[in-house]
Length: 592
Image (tube, rainbow, N blue to C red; front, side, top):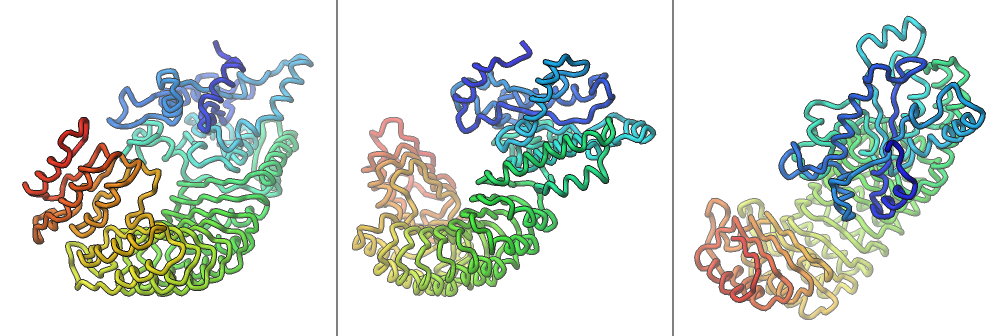
């Protein structure tokens, strides 16, 4: 049956929940003749191959471990079975009445035409642009004075502009960008290389949303129509209605992984003021650069409705001061994510300057940035900031002096509840213990924990502190009932991954008491650490006290059913202690 029954579509939409958008796919393509869009199945052959990938759940010829397409994954997740994956496909030629039309058919045609913006523009459904054209087509069209390409066609241009407006990045694909490698799989998790994912390769480098007047100008000056310019008014009204509708209603814009640079961000900043109720903007996994982030900062100053900005995985070194100044002027932002952005110490200081003034911000992540030397600036900001609740500074290369600087603010700050300092160098020791041990930073932080009135969670693992520091921290926690964790564990957490943190015996002792009493934790990975004091080459001094502390925790835990401790050079003594701890625990998974 060619048509999806409405009742069946409704059933699937309800069953798929938040993934319902994968069920609807719209095709945008260039008609190849005036009377028939695809007389020799050129488009059909390409789209059919993509459709097969879209339906594939990863059980056929896909890379081992791949999860296939997001559609198949959604059916699997909903309990519908990936083998039953299906989707509703919109293509104008078979779905809208074509000429000649009766009056009744013409009325239905116009009704369908008026809803094209929903098929192409809804943020959740999928749009495939088939931009590839047959060899010789461009020359043939040029001779006739018609559009030579998908981009030059007025209808295709507007369909592309509508689909670029608010759609999630990987749900708008240009099939003309597909490669042999990309036709390996549609997408999903489990694929090691992005160039093997069709949804990654074909989502890149789309335009930011265009203003209606920009579209009108391009329609009048650059775009062509098979029917002449009589369709300009039709498609102009289509885009204008779409834009005004979404600009006044969109609360979330997700432009992730589009390879946007400074030029695209500048264009975006020009249109964002029209999105009057925008709350969340995701520009992660792009190529914004410092220039692009600084352009965005100009808009952020007056972004009155925005509450969440995600810039993670962009190299925006050099933009910290501009973003910090924007924070000073902004009155709405509550959450700022800037993980792995290539920031340096000066950027950190710039952001800290904004944090000191910005009132609404409750969550800030600068994880994975080399901002060593900015700890004192953040400490000063914490002294005057009264709103921040979560601060993530994991893997920021912070050293002892940074710890002391942060401690000064932490001791005074009254709103912070979660602080992540995992995987730094707070004792000034680098890889394989290089450097000179300096306990002043961790000692200052311990002192601040003793007087801080708000903190309930701090993450300190992966900082190479010694037994003395661990005992000091455990004593502070014992004396502060409101401080629930020194390792960042949440009460409802069921899995914890501490893989590859170079944790030594002292850190194992810090973690062990929490594992012993945690109410819901079932699986923990401590693989690729130094739990017995030896690195992966056997360098160091063997010390089984930490692994024995973990074994003691295993023997009493009521929730844990799996522990991974491979690649730790545990030695016979350490392995024996762990095996004894899990004796009688039927089904317990101990991977050494």
